Length: 255
Length: 247
Image 1 (tube, rainbow over the protein chains, first blue to last red):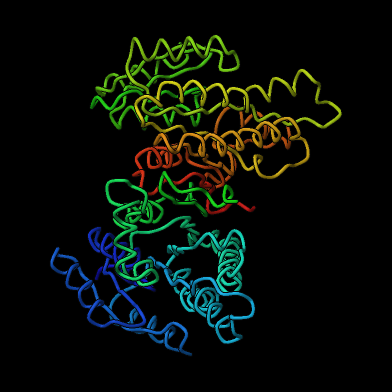
Image 2: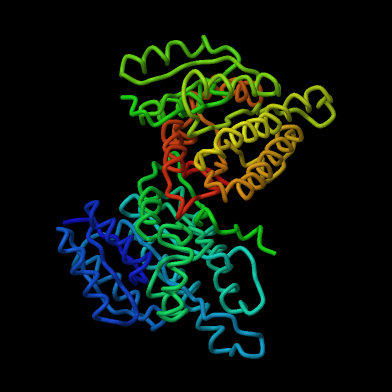
């Protein structure tokens, strides 16, 4: 039985690509996403075509009990979850204080912060019993600083970062490696940036800044960093690192 | 084993972390240049790695001296090869109560922690810019983001180093030169650290749990990894600590 790499938020960008990388390295990739069964099965088929193992599930991480049940099922039926990639985003675009509703604000927190807490609560005791595990968390610029229109997103992501630090402090000595990966720039990802911008604007951005200009982060290259973190020896763990393309400004350099 | 990847220049390559970095880059196919005040101290390591087919040189330079550093870079570029990776590992983990920290001690520690880093990145930028590529990595410390008692000199030097890394990263990124700051949070087992433990708490470091200390060879993997990242996704800063570290 192969160890499992569970990806929460497995679109065609970071989530699906990191899942593919781990499958190539001998894990059973379990890919979870909220919608688009067809896209999900395409990712699974892509991994299987290269000789890897993968299973896909549609899962809304906000639904009560759903995430916990899915973890139990995976542990019982597929294999021990050794690596988690928590890759749920909560970006809803810029919305002024007047525009953003109580419901939206709370939903951001449920996806970005509370779902992470629920996963840790369900999984960490199992990982601890097995002597360890790896919990990789994709995060965003908004985890480092707030901004106009980012009330929901920044509050949720800031909470995510603090939760990661707290989890790490409590569980690193028990063998669980929590790593907070700060994605500080635009990713060449059709399911997130692509959907936010629309197909035409996304393609234009790719041609201007991405592709040969190297200005958009490529998920296949990013996957190398995620995998490196999961392979670190416990005598030299990284809790936090940033990632951006060479031509992107760091968050602390923005005006 | 030298794959003609160019030169990896490791400044202030002492026997601990520096030596582990030297080994990683030499085995990885770079012509690795050891720079320390007494390069003959690295002879045993050079012999061992040469026997494995690695390419290495060792040179003497004072990383705190402007002329010495500019001579060093010129000599490496003309006699050995293009510097593709440049790592500054200078530091002097000196602990002293505030009132015992003399101006002389403060300056010396600052020169090693901070000024040497500045000279390094400036000289590296000069040779890397025309080629529009290169990686510069600084060995940082927790003391670069958090002060502590007894560390006025060391901490201010490491804070300064971190700001040099940030400023240079932004200035050199358009030239595709990758500047990274590796924040090391914890000690390795070395003679220096052993003396520190003995002096401070009368503890023999070898009686302690091995896992309380960073394994320098594992740490060197992070330097290697950062040096190989694609320009589409560079890490500027990462931290390294053992799973047991309290912070």
